[in-house]
Length: 347
Image (cartoon, rainbow, N blue to C red; front, side, top):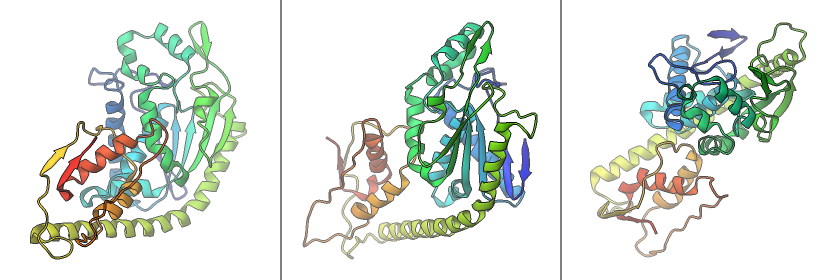
């Protein structure tokens, strides 16, 4: 469903889950949860492609975007945002335009840190094991899949206006009642951000029947504020992003010229590349994000001209909490830049 509010594109994208966020059987005979992280990324890529096509054909590429996400839709949008952020290559930089144009994200009962144990147990009693698929495993509290998606999105979150809503009434699962997404999961505490409860269960929290409902007033008020503020800010981001992509193109051209001419940075013969590439493991295929840090590291270590008079080691310290993605970042960086080094060795 695609609608329009003011100058904003509002898109509803619901694939593979029911009103409670439970996985349902897809047309190809597999549940969307199969493959867990890979399946979420697959759906995120489809969302990006379809939204890009819609904006291109409707000539609305530069319009600001406000995402309204219910349940697992919020997980999908976070993964799509992180995916778009890394699309800076010339052939796919149109995907990054979605990242640039996104002004706000409103999450309705999104299980950022997992679904409640009670809801998962009640769900398991009502649905066959095959229908639940691996997605239910990915949605348990503290799952690696959700942690990876949060790690990718959290550094980007300050860029957007965020609103977190949680359900204030339990949902019915046969004779059992349970909160599908508890408040602590629906509101991960990211700042800055707005947050509020809606007096409804998980299924009904975004289905308003009257303009006088308190929840509807909260959502409408926020949308009006976002629509008013978005155009000016997004316009400035377009200019910033064009500068970023221009610098990236210039750097790519400089690398091609250096490679084609066989000359090093200072005009002498370039060193032989890839003599030894001794890295014990590959980066995860799910890794994305951290583009700003990668660009900084490339500028400090890779793009600095060779100085034969000062053979000093260049050291760059990557630090962060356990599980924040330090190792994956380093593995991804050396893979992307391996042709710029004589030797690459990990210890």
